Length: 73
Image (tube, rainbow, N blue to C red; front, side, top):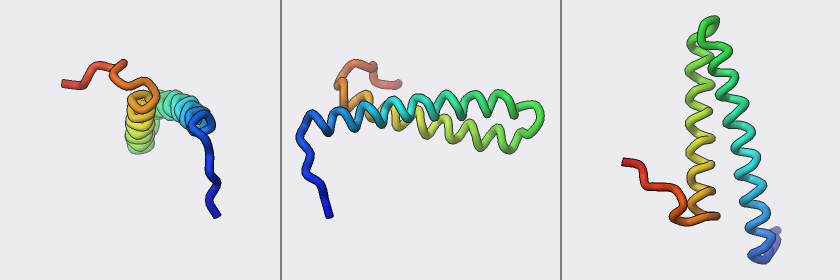
């Protein structure tokens, strides 16, 4: 079963997803920093997850506010 949503609801959902991704990115970044000295392998895993959430945020930012971020070199 699929729900049909209007554009305003779609924007709300994407903004909520972006906010959630930002929170997760902060959480994983903190874990990575905390684990760096005690558990390097877990710290690397957390750093990879941080990068994944940064990517999600970048994509959602581009969808929600096109052209606002400069293109990476």
